Length: 143
Image (cartoon, rainbow, N blue to C red; front, side, top):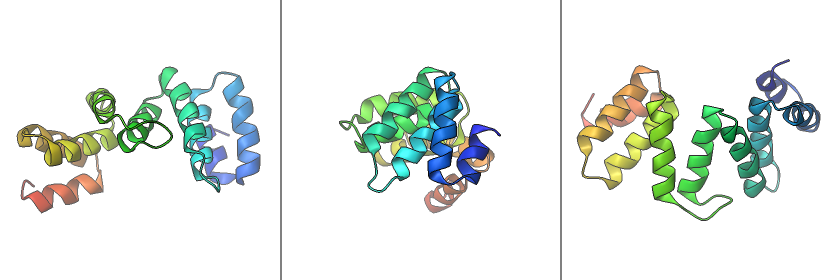
């Protein structure tokens, strides 16, 4: 089973055990899903989730880098660092990750004078099927 299948198909305790074994063997996608599990625990362990996301991102797993940026942006499990988060979002968006294109476009639309750049990122996210980007473009009249 892939780490994604383990995460989606097994109960959290069993998934954690199997994902941990894969992570110890260097599987960066398993590290990513361990981050998800930590973030979904009750109570949520955002700092623990961020540790796993950072390990996964350091191993090159792009989606994990997006989650690190999101946690930094909102100050979840770490001090808030919007500028650092935006830098990471730019890296992920430039690599084509639709969620990062959307989040970056959303941020730029709200907090930047560069509406044109925001719209470019949102259109890229929408072209990749991101529903939130489509909705935001429609709201702004740019679609």
